Length: 410
Image (cartoon, rainbow, N blue to C red):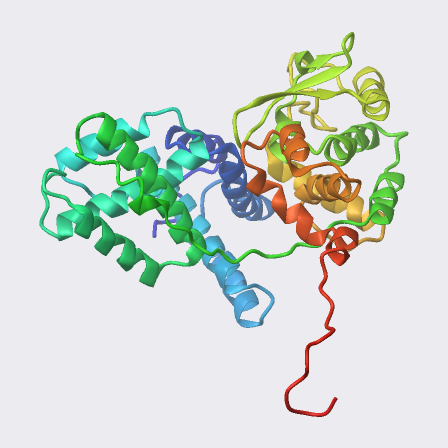
């Protein structure tokens, strides 16, 4: 690994964070990696050490393995923790960002210069960062498969070859992955056809339906939401902040990342509006500043928010008074409120948005109006809220009259 006394811990975290940023890791991911590294550094500081010690790191890794073998940690969390330790040590030993793996999906798939050029040209389009990452993985997989089939360019690729690739992924990946890959391939071939790289966009071939498994996630009951809000102590700075955050999720259905990014200039007090750019669709939406949300924001901004030059509304409750790091922080805020209210601990801040969507559907609001309020381009994103609307689902139930049971006792 390395020898004791070689790597000073002073400034190591700051350098690691900067290296993660240089490699393109998102703020949420960087926060998780930094927390793991902080734990390692803290163990050194507790023993009065100024240099990285391989034995302390080995002991920490051994504790994680023992927790996994004892059934206290699931396999995926164990594997992720070990990778995070390895990633931090790799950086500490070299001090270079290049020692870190690329966060881009598909980056390990090496393409020929021709295919790499076309992939980069396609991916330079106006896509959401998360979507671009998934597209990159799909495009690189497809082009790598073409290379394995002996193609050096797209010149002789025909319908049969595309069908063969689709068949191969249907046998290897889950229906949800096949659905996304089919969608990204369709966008890819629209681009290839427009640019003259392909003689067809294969629109009909790539329009087949994929039956995806959909989980029915129960909605948070109104009584539980009331308990959650009532449990917050609004006499404290943290309470004022957390209450305003919870109301933004409960009343307006904002996502955690949208709440974190909310700026003072996004509120138009005179017109009674909050302007938000939807993180998922990049669509700007103007939402009404309801009285309860407005009062909560006013109380926090005037009576609780620390003095800061930051434009973001929500800041840390303790020094340094910087903006909240990421959406993960709101998950921790939500979990703390759930525990205080006597509800099952959960970090899913999105539960508040789901509860609002379900409530709107139950009260007769159309899926199109809900989609517009939530800033969703497609009503398919809203349809899961229908699955938990028990009252209206009962109206769709069919009678068993005329159905004769076969076999067994009646």
